[in-house]
Amino acid sequence: MALPTLANHSGDRNCDDFESHAQAQAFFERHGGSESANVDGLDGDSDGQACEDYEYSGGGGGGNDPGDDDDDNTPPADDGDDTGGMPDTSTPTGTAPILPLMLVGVFGASALLLYRRRLAL
Image (cartoon, rainbow, N blue to C red):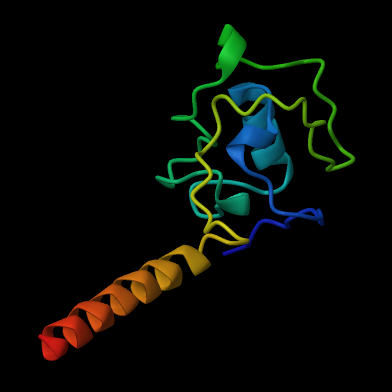
């Protein structure tokens, strides 16, 4: 059994890196994607169709895109529009982890003051 040769490309591509399903499918197939080879994880259900459940804006979801000749493997430019992609579920950075510690300190200090006051009575 011969294994498909995967074209060398840099970076992991996601469905939101493409403007249409046709563009995602063309990239998937061009880089050796099939039912048995899930290139960049674009085919979640291993049926050979890349990004089939992803909702692309503009209705460009099906068919071929003859103008797509994206052989340089660079993702599309970020236009700042974050609609339609996966939500940002990353852990916040900065002062957020300090807040719980501050709350514990305030409640601890309050409990200590109430305890000392009760002992004084």
